[in-house]
Length: 476
Ligand SMILES: *Cc1c(COP(=O)(O)O)cnc(C)c1O
Image 1 (cartoon, rainbow, N blue to C red):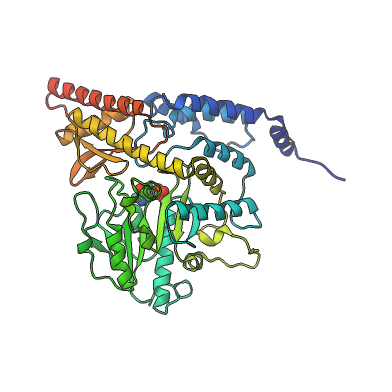
Image 2: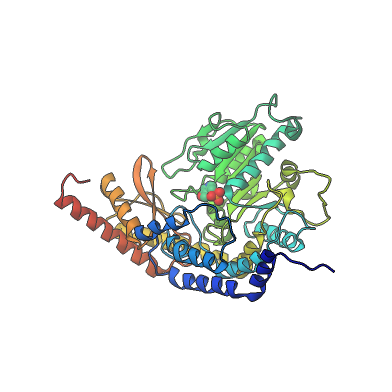
């Protein structure tokens, strides 16, 4: 028998069995985890400068594995943003529940392809289980189908593709076969404050960014229900559970009333807000969601599953599957769940492992506690900032807080100072024409002490800014 291995292959086997490499990675990971809750949230300028060590041409010869890991830890770890810690409030970015992180380590070793049951029975089973759990947790119609994708952008793509094709099918048109040229006209109705990814998806799906019918929104960014145009059975309506700035929820119940009467399709972008349905005290925000047709949600935001983990949920299984259909002679379909029928991709990592671990470790009670805690911290943030003379520009109904100082210049300079301080990190936005600092409380790790430390960073930043404007007039 010829058992000859190449020297590179020999080397790789010895890396696997020698363990040293993995022990090295593990010790770096532990060092990172031990430091992340207390370190500067954004990397320092000096650390970022060292990133140029990666600037080299593609090596010709195989590299030294220990050296590769060392490079990553020495220059990569300090230049990460401490998103998993408790003082990162940028965008809407979740941390990782510890068990989910550990499950991800384990499943990284499995490296499963979740395309088909025959490629990965375990992924298929966990997807089927999570589908059921999510439907129960979010109180969606029994039988709702779930597809496990990279995030809400892709989930919205799937939901709107299903809705588009289904509405056309009801008009006697097969969009899969015949495309959109010559198809019956569809109308798209969106709120003025729909997320940027919705418009991107509309462009990708041939529905157009600009030909949409825009519904005006109120001062919180909610669609004004009685400004919704007369709907009909050719309408895709896209509502929002959680405005990315204010956290406000569209009046979903009223939107669904109108849509149901007209046989329109309602998709809900609930990237971070849909999880409100898992909390008894926040559930009223999502009233009526069960009457929509499709929903997109991110497990990597409020739920704190590791990246990347988005979910498309669709009331009509056949509509989603028909929109995502692939056929090829070598594909072995099974009686069991074949994940690729629910997603645009064929090959896909088994991100459901972490989702399953997150849901199993939190349970219904843990999800509720997490959602409530994030919202309570947001409220506390707003209250404390308000008492320090900052202005809060939104009703804090969920996990988002919009903050401003007295002048736009002061707000901008204060934000820059906060970002540089390393004490916490927030983004900025323009809200109702005004420059704001945007706080999103989205990490399980955030404690009351983190909130207080961050409020102190806000106060300190504003004081520093005031001082420099007072001593150097005109410098701003
Ligand atoms: C984050 C977000 C998205 C985009 O989700 P990704 O997971 O980044 O693709 C869409 N809509 C809303 C409301 C969001 O908050």
